[in-house]
Amino acid sequence: MFQSTAYSRAKTRRELLAHYALGALAVGVTFPVILIVAYLLHEAWPLLSWDFLFANPTGGMRHGGIWPALLGTMYLVTFSLFVAAPIGVMAAIYLNEYATDNWFTRVVNLAVVNLAGVPSIVHALFGLGAFVLFAGLGRSILAASLTLGIMTLPVIVASTKEALSAVPLSFREACLNVGATRWQTIRGVVLPNSVSGILTGVILEISRAAGETAPVMFTGAVFYKMIEEGQLFGYNIMDQCMTLSMHLFTITTQVTEAPHALPFATAIVLLGTVLAFNATAIVLRVYLRTRKKW
Amino acid sequence: MLERIDNPPLSAAAGPRHAVPIALPQGPSKSRHRVSRPTWEVVGELALEWLIRLCGVSAVLFVFGIFFFVFREGAPLLFSERFSLTKFLFSHDWYPTSHSNVRYGVFVLVIGTVSVTGLAILIAVPFALGAAIFVSEFCGKRLKETLKIVIELLAAIPSVVWGFIGITVMNPLIQNVFHVPVGLNVLNSALLLALMCIPIMASISEDAIKAVPDTYREAALALGATRWQIVYRVLLPAAKNGLLAAVLLGVGRAIGETMAVLMASGHAVKIPHSVFDPVRTLTATIAAELGETSAGSDHYRVLFIIGILLFCITFTINLTADLVVKGVRKA
Image 1 (cartoon, helix red, strand yellow):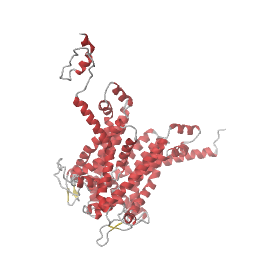
Image 2: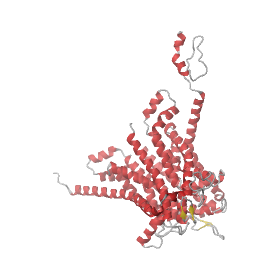
Image 3: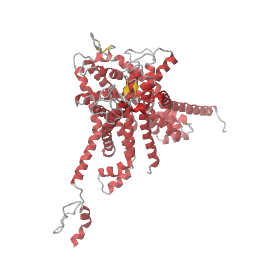
Image 4: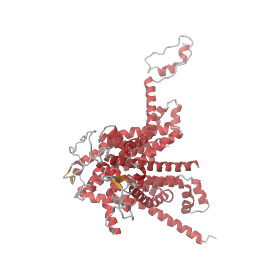
């Protein structure tokens, strides 16, 4: 009665086959990350040192370090955060706490999705047209940061919205019931309970902004600019600056006869920065999930 | 004395904040005192709430702003008599710097974008779908977390690093494996783009599969279906709109990608006949040529018109993806 039929055997076989095939596809996706990081690290190893980070490039960018690029990226990320963080967090508060479910809210949500979907090079054109030319900021750190800030806005909106909607409705109701206004509820109950989730979004924004090349290419990044080595305030906000991503692009495609390890070392610094920020965000999120009591 | 007992808690609560002493009613009291907050606090809260509303609609403003400012730079040429839209879209000649006969035809660039994107999506879909199905239906909790984290890290790798990998790793690899003279071609950039789209497609597909109600799975299990049969017969048909949206968003991402294709596609303005031919895409053209043009020249404005074209394409794709998902929710 319980003998296996040809059909049931085929069924089991197919099940196993699917399991392994899908598993192979999933694991196959993860290989590139590991291989890429390992390969870049291996090739870059001879050049990696503190001197490399804190020295100016020399000899037509064939030797020396990456300090101006590193500092430029820090500047751009910081100022873009000043733009994206307040607007993004407040936009998320609006969407999650104030907006009712109607056509207008749907339009706003669609706009956020679309803002994330606009190609980075179109953001560059926008930054050039709006900030560099129309607002008269010129090619500067300020113009590039504004462009980057608007580009990375959806990252903060998305993760802040997620953090806010994770706060149970009963918390809000309890607060409103003791006579608090809507803003008092948000300020006293919703935000304190979601601050780490918002922080995750901010960290992801940093990682995203640090890696972008196209939007800063025509709005504030230059091929080469010397600044004082190790000086933390080497740039003025209206200066143009070097960035890590642009520097990598330049020494890969424009500079000939650069030593083999140089672009690899630049790439690993860029990739390391980006992945480190992402890993921090992930750790923070996992920690939060385990700690959450509701 | 009796009157004092009438309202002590309220006046006590409001008391310390107000410099004005609470006037005790002289005669029979008509209205009770209400607890009121200082005026600046009420006004400040109102202002803040309006600021929040403003920021809420800012995304809409920015999307319009992007279109407006890109359009503003392209418009003078777009509406001039020197420019014909049919020639722009369907002419094969892209000679923006020719002295005698300047021609701006983006057809070849569109073909470049389409070929690279198409091949990338063909490569990416099986991996993304496979990963999504495996993560949501087949694997254990720990493996699931690990895979999701690695896929998220894959999404974080900047596009300029992908381009760099295209030049330093993929280029020699393709040369050696397929014995072709140049490794910077359609295949190279499609592989890079596939790796870049897989994370977004996988995570949206996973959401779509996860959104299928558990009762569907239970019903299929009760009929004696294996997990693969559930996936194949129940989950995929039920989640098909979400999966379609995932693919569409992947396409949008691939079309808009700039740095990786700029570095790895070989940068030749011609229609590819095999995957080993170099091509040029719309995005790469803007990135490569905008730096060499002077603001206000025709060439400069044509690049902005390409920007409008890209904006419209990605806008349409995102809108379609949104409608597809919303259609599911209504049904």
